[in-house]
Amino acid sequence: MNILSIQSWVTYGHVGNASAVFPLQRLGAEVWAINTVQFSNHTGYGDWAGQVFSGENVRALVDGIDRRGALERCDAVLSGYMGDAGIGEAVLNAVARVRAANPAMLYCCDPVIGDDDTGVYVRAGIEDMLRARALPQADIATPNRFELERLTGIACATLEQAKTAVTKLQATMHAPGPRAVLLTSLDTEETPADCVDLLAAEGGAFHLLRTPRLPISVSGAGDAIAALFLFHRLRGGSAAAALEAAGSSVHGLLRRTAEAGSREILTVAAQEEFVAPSVRLVSWRC
Image: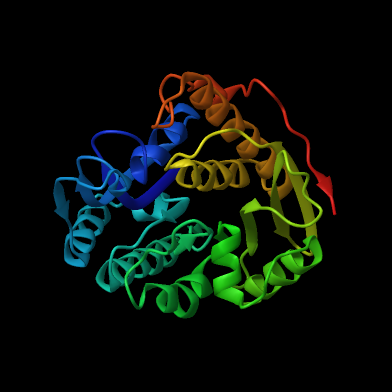
C-alpha cells in the first residue's frame, strides 16, 4: 500500500505528518510524505520556529515522484491542514495527477477548519476552497462535528441531524467513489456525558462507535485517526470495520497518553495500539 501524505510537519511532538506517517508505516504502508511546513512544534504552544513551504514546493516534489514512475502505484492521497490557497491548489493538482495515473486511487481529505474550543483557525478562503474544490474530489472525508456543521450548515445536536449533515456532505463528494465519511467527534443529546461518539457512513449505512471520554486535550489525534481510517478502509473495503479499527487504536493511544500525563500524544511509546489495540471497540448500525 502506497500513500502520498501532504501535511504539515513538526520536529517536536506529533501533528500533521508527524502524527500520520509513523502509524501508517507501523501498519506496513509505504508513505510518501510531502511536508507543507516544518516547524519546531505545533502552534498551540504560542511560539515556534520554522518555515512555511509554498504550493510550488509541493508541486516540485510531486514532479520528482512522478519522474520515478511512482504515481501509477499510488493507492491514496491524504491531505490535512492547508496553510494557504497555494497549498490547496497543489494538493488538488497532486490528486488529479495520481487519479490520471491510477483511476482506482482514493483521495482522503481531512477538511481542517477549526473546532468548538477554538472556532475557525484556518486562513480566509480555505473553508470555501475545501467546500467548493477539495471535497468534490474526495472519496473519503474525516471532519469533526464543528467542521461538518460549517461545511453543511446543519446543526448536529442529535444523531439524526448528524446523519442528515453527513448525507448532505456525501452528496458533494467525488463520484463514483465510495463517499465514505468519518465524523471524528460527535457529542449529541443521545451521547452519555462520559462518552464521545464517532460516526462512519458509506453506501447509505451508518455505524456509531461510542468511546469512553478521557481527561485529555492534545493536538494531533485527528491527524492520526484520519490516516488510520484511510488505511483500514483501503485494506478492508468497509467503512464500519475501518471505524472500529481506527477508533480502537486512537482510543488506546489517547488512554496511554492520558495515563502518562503527556501534553504530546505518545505515538511511538504506544505504537502497539496501532497493530493490536488493547481494547477492541465495537460499532453498531444506527
